[in-house]
Image (cartoon, rainbow, N blue to C red; front, top):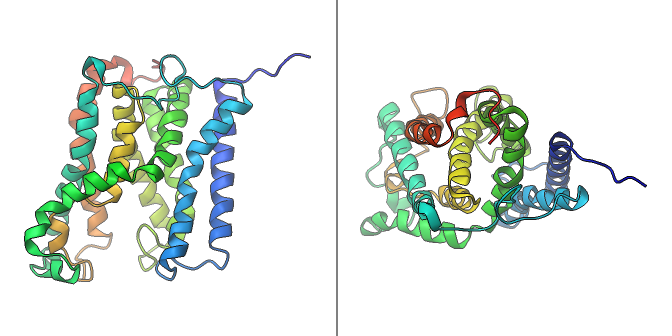
Length: 300
């Protein structure tokens, strides 16, 4: 009997089917009564967060089912391995500090858009001493790296499997756009219960899903850049985990309960603009390393 032959496209579809089905089923099991994120207790929120591991589980399942092999480096790599030779160590360093840069820059933009949100005593409501504010980014970097399990659950799938397949199939430019949209749509169940933007904004939840697709596309460019340049998903994991830990000093002075002067959440606007600013020089560096980045047929 002839063994079935799988193409990159069929493997990608199998991976996406596993990822979306397993994650969405888990979200329904973890939140059967459809509570919003704010209505959940910490225990249920933690249970929901376990859904973040399914992208990497789906990566492993797809490789097993399609007999693709499981190399940690080299051709058809899973990108799970680590190497620091050839200057690749610098991408791990960049990964540790770049979330602080774009988060703090985003906060500056938010305050520029809505100066009324500046609250010189807000850090007191967070239970933080003023002299300890400067340690918040350090704490986020350390805890993000140590507690990067959930972030590996996502990046081990998106950057370790989906993006390499998309790039081989359609080229980097289109892959970065489509990959971001897929990643954003995968977050839809969480966006619909208010995890990302709350539930009280105009156009809920569809506008939130659209905004999440835009954010995931921009962040995905940064994470894919780090993965390709380092040959590993771990710099992307660190960025993801540290970003989730909110590495910021200015957050101690921004009161989100104060009215915004713009319709769309100013924090989201600030983050998007800051990501664009950070991504531009990285793309220039990326383009020098992989010249066909803006072509349709690039497949390296």
